[in-house]
Image 1 (cartoon, rainbow, N blue to C red):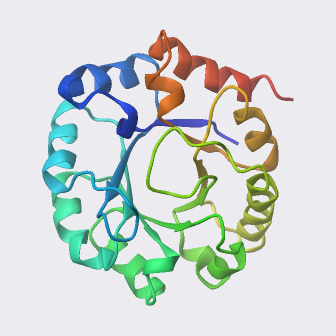
Image 2 (cartoon, rainbow, N blue to C red):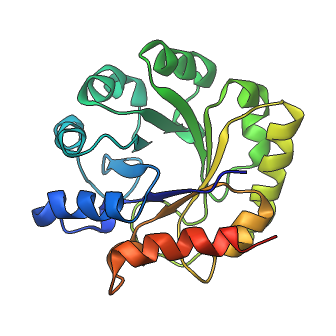
Length: 221
């Protein structure tokens, strides 16, 4: 499997956004993760299309947009136009998930589905073959810097088995509490894409931290 590191700008200093993006590039990040929160589905409010557009103007890296919003379909066109590479939506807010994933693809973006800690992997079985990204939350979404939920490892293993059964090449992403202490176990469980916010941007050397996270996965034989 390919290791992908996706630093989350949620933990960066937005007053120095260009510098944060440059750090991601210098560290060899594969994606940049953007957390869109509406203050309704999750207890926090972040940004929308204008922020995505600004980040797109600063980098050619893929922009992995995680939509923690109700009625996500209202934003698909704006976010795609702003430069999102992929749009991942929560199964908990998507009663017409197949239709919504199809619409994301029609707009030229990678289509992802996200499951909260209390949502079973089984909720995505019927669309597993349609996914470009399956994102497992290993914290309850809404805030950065939370503690990793240990039973997420078993969930990642089950998600990997489900994708394999569906012959899906989707990226298996994990988000929440990813750090040097947790990334190796996540990789062993089957995750290949790692969202790291606090671990990267609170580090003394964020560039070196991105590289260290990747190296910990590569060291596993």
